[in-house]
Image (cartoon, rainbow, N blue to C red; front, side):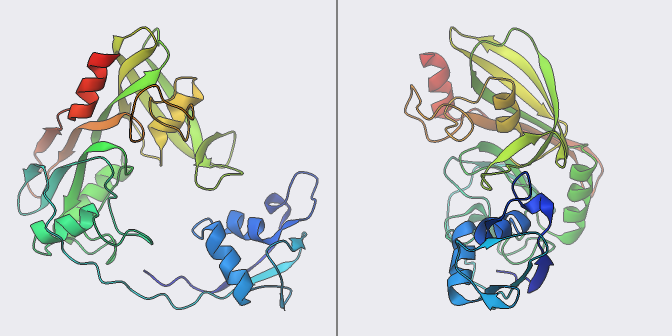
Length: 309
């Protein structure tokens, strides 16, 4: 895990509730440093690694505007990320890039709590360690990612030149990314959702549509088939924000089937997370400049679900 620098900050009004009321120190730190989980922040407070105005405090201590918070982070231990012989469904591969069809319940890259069984572990074995190093030791080869329970196309790079090329295409929104999904309710027509998306103001594990302060996000959706209570759609991403399709479809009142985070807490079918599949991925090859497009077939569970509904 990469080492984060120690830091201090002054509590400002935007980190406090409306009206400038005092707030719990753990919530303020979580809002300011969303890379740190709430439980980790509470652990740091208990250890005395977070102080307010130079003094140790408990998680429940309330801070106000102009209070000075200092955070001393312990030296992180870099874990060994081992190659693992995990079967991969390869959709395209050459000496520069590899595109795989990621299954459900697989995390893309290692993180605290997930240092094995990830796509990176599988790629390290399959590619014999020949992956780009731009994104560090925890994410070799990884230029983009999809959620654990989202299936479909993920591209990884085998060298830094390829990585830089694909990253530039992602930044320019020129990579073709089309997802298939099943949503609650019956959509009447094709459409576009254009909003700002950012971290949820109260639940830091979620994203949300914001009126200001978020990042521009555009999703185009097209109806593939209408059912009595659901709609089968294709979503084309113009931008690639975290949870973008899930947040956008919930925002217009049609959350993804199986998405208990942004949709109903109960599901009429036995599912593992949202019905979302990264089907089409198109890009300019980093070495030849030729357009390459791969099509990940719908997983069996998705096809069976379409027959059921």
